[in-house]
Image (cartoon, rainbow, N blue to C red):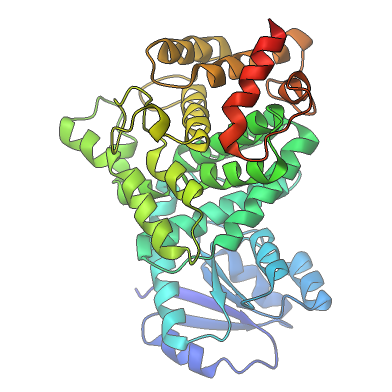
Length: 403
């Protein structure tokens, strides 16, 4: 049986050339925007949505009739310069974007690649976030960005970094509004695997950066790095990622390649890559004592942004269940992080900062890392860092004040 795709289009659109290209590779059914009954099947197969997202009437119709995306990929067509359309696409469940003017053969290639990638998506733990859950809109935007990243990495497709930036803004705003733990609880309830881990690292990073008093732009950059940090894992077989037993030496070496694979994909896909962002993705498994990978960096060779991401990655990984372990509580996690700091593997000042925030949350009865407390910004005489390069100095000032 041939792979199947549905194409939702404006009533007056000429889709003949796109349909012809799709039919050379797939079975195709077209659905006009005015066809109420046709919407029902859009959750049951791979879908391409080619409508005018700048038209309010169209948006109202999609909000009322477009079903929540099921297990199948959904590619949405946008104008190249319309950032608002990209955000709308995320809200409507896009797993990938197609950019006008469309090239029919490229549309067919993208659709087929998305279908193939979608078959493996469940293995990475993507769930379904209900629209009424705390932080739902930002999580939906973030998970759609992850889906697009994973699909593009698998297929070797181009990728638009603006989508990731928009996700960073959405997540940062949501956590500032509802708090870290409420956002994370939604993620834990509805996602698993690599999706859950990437979202949890993002939540920890945004909550941590916000509490540290980092500039909003730096928190958003940290959110982007956290969301994308494990994109290279899509090249690691699922049975290796989810293996309940100890990995063999060969399997571990394969898993270690994920940071390099992610870096290569992102560096090639970004027209003007942010070097700090790429460095954090490549080196988030480095250790200050040189025992990490992939390059065995030591001390000052590891950037502040990467040091923060590393600790957030460890915190999130220990807080979630895996096939080979149960989730740990914050006191257990802090014991391990403190031990890593004593061994010289992670930044002591950052670990202490995490400990203060977690302890403050428990003592006050509020969620760990829950905004709007600004412990470190106040302790450092309101000297919010202009960039991540001054982050460690800011924490040091806060530490001396607490003493």
